[in-house]
Structure formats: C-alpha cells, structure tokens
Image (tube, rainbow, N blue to C red; front, side, top):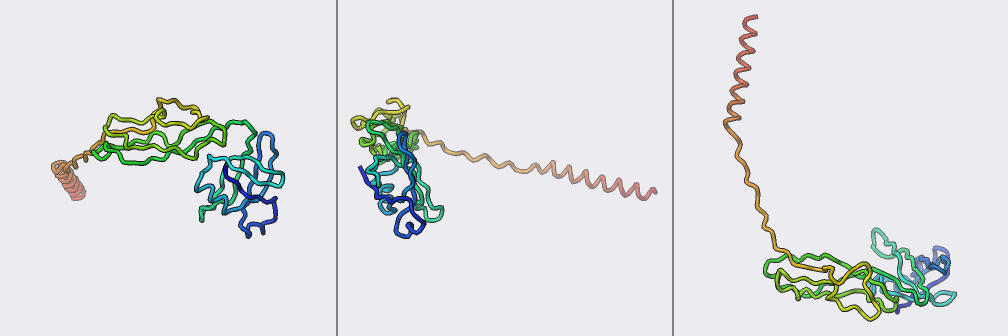
Length: 213
C-alpha cells in the first residue's frame, strides 16, 4: 500500500512548495479539502495507476483511500487536482484494471490481425489485494482460431470478476482482408459528343430565328 503526505487546505502559495489541491470523502467520511505532495502523487500514478489503494497521511490520522478522479493540466499534462474515496474497513470495491499485452503472436506474423476485445478487466476485491494491471501474453495465439479468454487469467486470491464471465474473449485473431480498389470507369465519349452536337444545333436555331426577324 502506498502513502501520500497531505496538508490542510491552505492559501494558493502552498502550490509553490510542491503541493496540489485535493479532496477526500467517503460514505462515512465528510468531504475534506487538502493539499497533497505533487511528486509523491505523480510517482503513484505512474507506477500503480488509479486502481491501487493508498494511505492518506492526514491530520486526523491515516485514511485508506482510492483515487477517484484526477484533473490534468491541459498543456503540461500533469496533475493539478485529485479526488480520493475513503474506504471503510472490510469494504470491497470494484474497479476497472488495465490489461497489458506482451509477447508476439505467430498468427499475426503469418498475416493475421490482432483483435483486442477488452482493454481492462472489471473486478471486485479488498482494496489491499487489487493488482494495478493484468498481463496477457499474446504468444499463445499461434493459429487464427486461437483466442484468450478472461478465464485464462489467473486472478489473485480474493479478487473476483465483476460483470464479466470466464468465457468473455479478451483477444483473438482475424483474417486480414485485402482491400480491392474499385476500377475507374472511362468517361463516355459518345455522350459528350452528342451533347456537344446538341449545343451546336441549338446555336444554329437561334441564329436562324434572329435572321428571320
């Protein structure tokens, strides 16, 4: 479990000391505004992601929490605000944990197309037992008929699937479809010629009408 140093909500000058604003709350915890150490928080995001549980070191004591939302700077892409949800003791949570694909598929080497059906697994568990990612080795996909299902992933003890079944497909192989370019039709020259003749005839008719007047 990871920990983050916090400070009580303070004036904006606190940001200059390397802290960013945040808030934590829960079903039995009132919403409390704080500042968190920016460097510590960035390390947690890069190493553990948003599905891992953390400990907030607050004035009122340590709070077990999970990252609820993170607001990023649109230019620098760095965290500028975070929300934390406090977890009660014994409470299970369900999260969407990312899937990381590794290895090389022989089926892909032979011309198949890798089809990633799922990019994350929805699971439920005690926050302390949640992995921050699941690894799927696509080297098991040897032929175009091979698939990797949710049931092929060994879940850690205490972690259960949430709204998923072992038969749900994670990744499969599809046959490559060769694109056929539509033939370019040659222009109908006879139609152009007839149209041109028609225009000449119209011009001659107009001239005769003018002379008769």
